[in-house]
Image 1 (cartoon, rainbow, N blue to C red):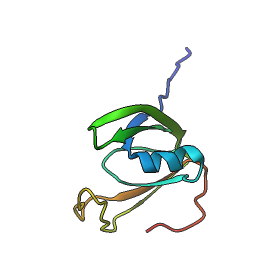
Image 2 (cartoon, rainbow, N blue to C red; image 1 turned 90 degrees about the vertical axis):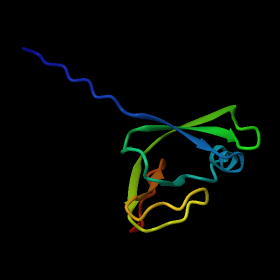
Image 3 (cartoon, rainbow, N blue to C red; image 1 turned 135 degrees about the vertical axis):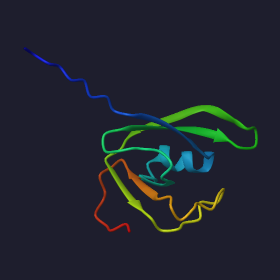
Length: 104
């Protein structure tokens, strides 16, 4: 008996501001520090959708990256829009496999 198991990778969509989107598409940015309010792991894809906060809507631009590394931290970081609770983690996403540093 042959049993086939299909593994599906997660595809995640996240908003990104125009100034950060520009850095992403130019290749200047290859890491992304985010609030760990979603599940993601190595091999998942993340679609960054450019968000125009002034208009309150998405632009037509998006960029897809495959996650090569995820590091998480329980440190209390200020993410600008919200102050996360101490029980929430932060995560650093890498799509160029550059994890050669410690993230605590």
